[in-house]
Image (cartoon, rainbow, N blue to C red; front, side, top):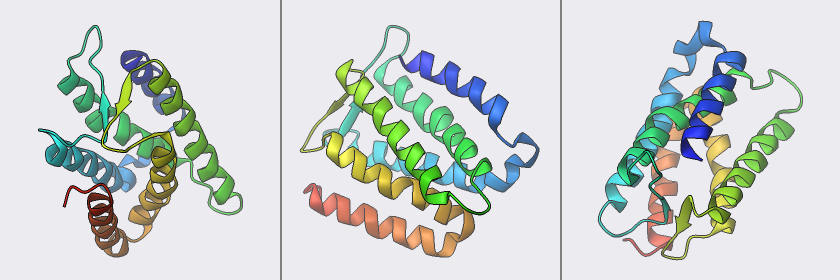
Length: 163
């Protein structure tokens, strides 16, 4: 499923993203890649809340690497480069949140992703409700988004008894 997801995402990204202005979205692409990599770093030994399972062609580490360095940045590029200038911003973000949640629901039912330490699909939905607006906030105002991201991360670490 991971390889299928990457191929599908690459095709959609090449078709629908604003590649001429990719530099405009690059800081937010790095933001999401760094955030995902930071999660991997702190959860490496024993504290995963969710875990991508290895696939036929990719080890667990490589699955995470593909998601952190390819999937997540491409999602940011697609999301931001098609973000409405005016109008239906709420519905645009809601489509992304629901779409991501459905993909995760499917992945969890296929055991491509597993949950640990109290995390579940409900927490994932709440995370997505925060994540997509944070990506947009980072794109328009990094000085607010970065400290807010740190605060949210610390709150999650405390809620799930990591610290």
